[in-house]
Image 1 (spheres, rainbow, N blue to C red):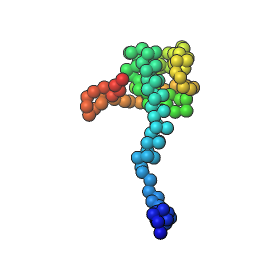
Image 2: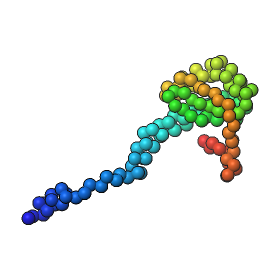
Image 3: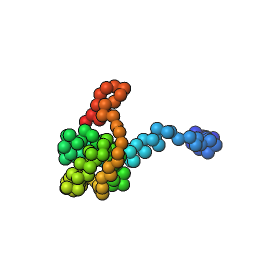
Image 4: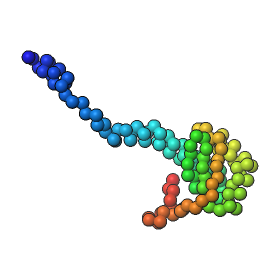
Length: 127
């Protein structure tokens, strides 16, 4: 038998490993799904900083962007009302026009968040 025949027999008798690399699977997930959402959320964060006044922006946190709905956490009812008034007054249209993706609506939810990371003492969101 020559080397080509031995190589062929070896490849045919070899047991195929059914184990796949977890890194490759997670890489695809990160690149296709999460990477796109993070990029869109970062674009929205930049727009948010430009159109929302500073005194109101400090009381909000962008939490999620999914299927055209931006979820924003607001820390008090009064700030939530002010933000709703601004959004209805035309700020929502301005953000929609400047955003490259599909932004259907902004959902405001009450909640608390830390503006400073309790472990490091630095701002939670650095741009």
